[in-house]
Image (tube, rainbow, N blue to C red):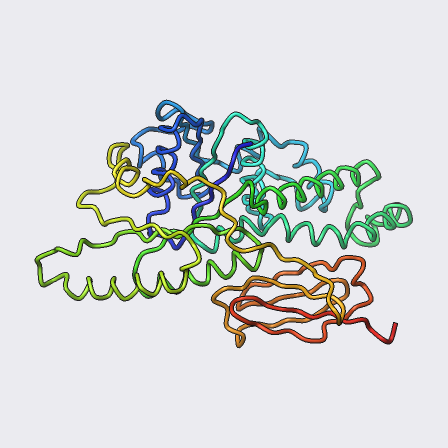
Amino acid sequence: MSRIYIFTGKGGVGKSSVAAAHAIKSAREGKKTILVSTDMAHNLSDMFEKSLGKEPMEIMENLDAYEIDPEYVMEHDFASIIKCIENMLPNSEVEDMSQTGMIPGMEELFSLLKISEIHKSGEYDRIMVDCAPTGETLSLLKFPELLSWYMERLFPIGKVAVRLLSPISKMAFQVELPNKKAMNDIERLYLKLQELQELFKNRETTSVRIVTIPEKMVVEETKRNYMYMNLYDFNVDGIYINRILPQDIENPFFEQWLQIQKKYIKEIKDTFGILPIYEIPWYEEELKGKKAIERITDDVLIKTDIFDSKMVLGREVFQKNSKGYLLDVSLPCADKKELDLFQSGTDVIIKLKNFKRNIPLPNVLRNYMITSAKLEEGILHIQFEKDDKE
């Protein structure tokens, strides 16, 4: 079964170079590999000094490169899903579905669908994904769960509405409700979203790896990135510290920079000590062209287990205890002052700064309420007890 490696981090830290170096190493090992860019500001063409088209192109033996164009993918690979989305929306909203920007998240959805399709094809042993900067990567990965959450709540209402309101819906609500066949399409889309969630959260299948540099603002964003990835239950199993200055520089100009880097390298190691950490030197040349990228492969990616599946933190799980049930959610680097938690209907809602996640409750907990919550050593412990009013 092929594995997916997702590289993320703040803009400008060298994600593309690190992802490309892994792709080259993988290809050298005889594994059929594809390097995929989901960043709309694609730079794989510049990096490999080759003009890439709208389909995968061979870069070297066992290695293809591919810059995803969501609009092209939408039109050529997923016409049935476009039809499904059209059936979910008023006609005025879908006069030109080629304009994916009209619907927030559509570019992310079709990029993920394409990666999933590549994975399902079995053509490649390893898939390296060069993602956009942190915020866009989070939007990319959390979109299937977010859309699924809304669809779960719309399904029962939608089916009743189709049966009872369809004849008057267009006149009364200015919306043409989907017919029975369309609802079946929507169900298929929902199942597709569930498949995407399972694929990208499956620790045996997908790894998220964060690239950073030893500077204050970048290190702080790396902590937030790691925290948010765990909030949404993605498996982060590697940190790459890029652009480390050599310690033997005999130039007074760099003395302060060396001290700054030393400070933040230590902070990264103290914060992410549970993860494998790789240190990448600052090279004297621009990392452009295959030979330049190979320097990272040869200097840094020398461990034989670098592609192994590493499950650093466990998935969220409900466990029965003497009081009722306990839910543990990994939130490393979280500050309880920035954390908000509440229960709404059949969901637990966790808010962390500007991000929010809805965790559906299993049926067995429908009559249970949150009675306490405690953040200890990066784990949020949420206690549920039977609601006596029921």
